[in-house]
Length: 441
Image (tube, rainbow, N blue to C red; front, side, top):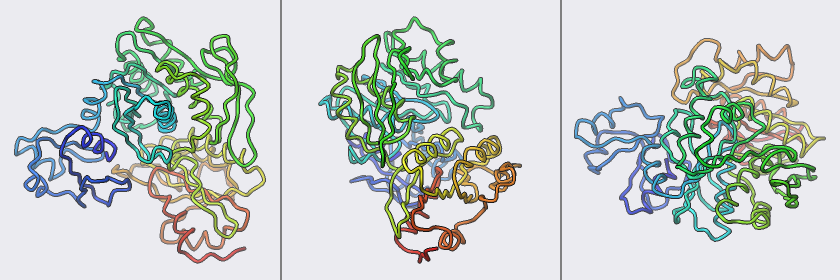
């Protein structure tokens, strides 16, 4: 929402905001009021009220706006209004879209194309989660509620079509159908860029209309339009690989970020950039200086020999990718993870898969579920995940009240301490670095 507010403000709109907590992201000159209240409508008398999907239509402030005839739009409706007037590069997928958007935006920015950029996280390399620029509009599109179908990209990227957001998509087929509509909704003559290694995206490829422009696929080896081979994990972080494009060896890419998933993300970004006129060599040079987005394998600091990292992963596929990448960077260090399940619906559906993914860590702590506004349902607790862990002794439930005390006597020099989840679990890593007393074992 803060990124959208910045873009609207830059486009000449008078913008104010409100939230139940102080904003995590910097809103610059845009005032953000704490809390929701009908009084905001009376004070500012807006022409339009734009809602996050987290805000109910029965919210008193929203109801008051309705009573006064104020137009109400969803976040996606407002964003698509700006996006669809531009040369849109839309990045969608259950995982990887934030990093792919960040990579694509950075390439176009550093290559001098003056893009507009909209990302779901702060990107240190561009200094924000949004930049108001010119004709090219690079945007991370949210599939969680189906609203990504409102966008008509010139370049549509699908990083994967994995089953997530089970509160909205009741079956895997529902997910595939939505991504197929998104793919076919691109502008006439537009290009679709898809990951060939994802089963869901491959099903979308089979179902989508191939007559509406080009379709490019990327993956491992030399069998795709863009392929990566000869991967080498760098000691201390980063990964390098060679690129093959339509029958031609293009050269090496040296990423500062780690993980095979980021190799695939970079292929999507390189492919989109080439369509926009940026050559491979330029893209490779720019990506070498890409340092990732906030909350994506982010190194937060080090204390008493314990390296603290944070990651947004909350789906089993994301957890596996993150833990695999961290293991590849630090193969000889003990990995201590504190994971905060996100949404009761996701936890109930994927409890077994989450337990299996987390088993890659040496020591696992589970916080209570971050509800994201959902009501409790059966089989949706951290204890449910533990019940699927097959008697592992290295996993236990904690809460925010006792986590600091437990960690105090668990962490030891040489450990990697990884906070993981889409909620506020990251605060425990920050507290460890700055406040609570730590006794080395």
